[in-house]
Length: 216
Image (cartoon, rainbow, N blue to C red; front, side):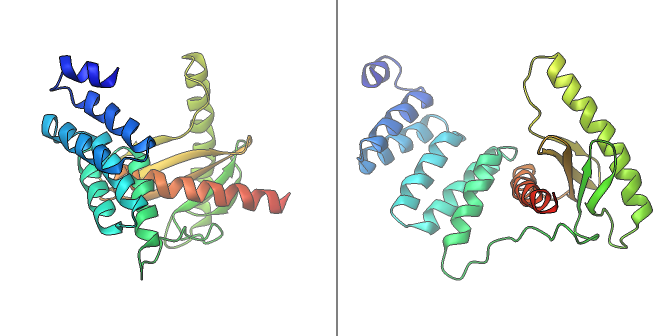
């Protein structure tokens, strides 16, 4: 069916991408690569093709090519967290690579703040000076914002809130629910790509969930 569709629509990048996925699932990497290159000829910004080429390169342990393809994908889709997660994964397995560590949750200067839905600060902080008064105020405001975001998504029928973002001229902030009664705030400078911010926040949220389990 994919081949028949391409016969009618040879200039549709998604059609070549579909055929490439089928070939990759069949284990025919050479045919998959050819199809993904054809997709890029139709649409040089096709993120799926870049991710596919990175996948087959990673499977062949060609980490340099995989990294390059994911970097190109990130250029066209800076808000795609899956691309940044994959890029972090590729970089972490390369010889001599050092994976980016999640800052310590209990460090007040880590840029991580864990709070419960009553607005109580549980761990972390929001500034280099470890100002507890500021952290407590942010926790209180963050809890209200998190509850309102959850209520809004529920009213709109959008399901459970996975995360939400706040962008300013100087900073980018990700807020992620943790368990059922807490949330995590991560803030970084405005230069960080959204995808990398979400990837880091996701790993931090997992660490926070484990920390909460130990504290209970």
